[in-house]
Image (tube, rainbow, N blue to C red; front, side, top):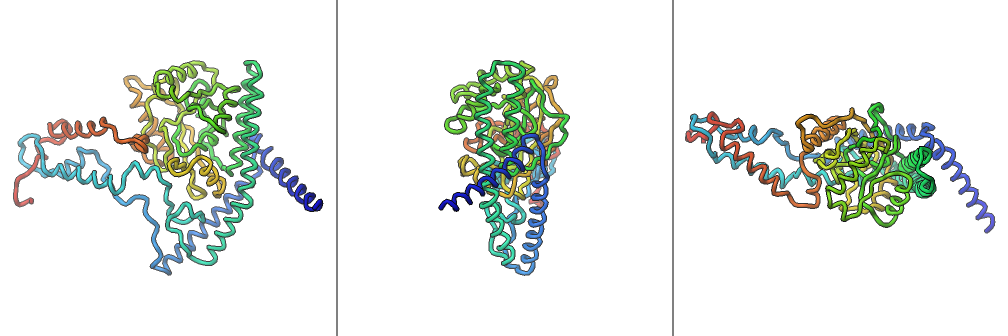
Length: 453
């Protein structure tokens, strides 16, 4: 029995030696030994081989199902005026009037929404074109060949028996150090030394947690990184976005006060750093939230605020409407585009399907987290521009840089009904068309020519 305990102790010591000296210490100083890069290259080669194997089997077996396309409807993409103008037929110049063909436009849009809704499909996992040896990321997985099945089995062993324990160890150490470090720094009097130590603790612990996710992060245009007194605005795919951004700089977080483990983290972090946490009742008061954020931004010595204006997680394919409240505060906006590589794991958090613990377990048993982060030039409110227009301008820049779809829909439709204002907006647009105010005028009124029926 003693020999067994000696062996277990020896294995544990070797394990912690590898974790501390080969992973944690390099991560704390922002260094890499190159192991993760080699690991990603090997993964790419394996996934390319698997893709070619699947394609060959599909050619040899015509009965094999073809992957589902990401979209089953080819949308026209034009405005209401353009699409309705194509439906109307040239006729005599009798002035603007109602055309029966106008109803076809609304029938078409209604059917498109029923069959392939642009909103709800943004809250389901992105379907890959080819299997990446993770059954959770492809609905069309089935037995293909013995060799591919063996590779998948080896991948399960590596992910669950080697990578998962290693990632749990690193995440536990990182979160524990974050709680203890921020609590101890919080006892120090306010000074430049306290601020420096707080930033050091946050940065170090977030880097350890990122290694606990096997995160490979590529940052671009670092000269545009958010500065103190500014607001960092980014698209939102997962709660891990916070860890990804905080690996390259410190931020003041904004959010609702929680209970449990997350509440413990929030209470410890706010002792050493001016994070902005709100009670549930305060979150409903827009003026109170804006007032506290405005006071934070006015202090140019405080860390930049990190905000995700979409208000919910989107599935790494699109950017949805930005809430204008973040753009009414004032100050400089620093846009950041985040795009995850879906080949190595699905980073999207479907909060309606998985709780936080289940989601993190899925992330820790994926191949890796590979992400690109682009820092975009700072932006400010232009003369004559309102907050909503400013928000849309920032959103478009982020979507363009990240290669994401720029959607005007509110992410809140995930849990709420369509607002009456959106319906009224469509009605007003059609009314202006009927009155000839939007470019569909007399040359495009209805024709009663029976030869064209």
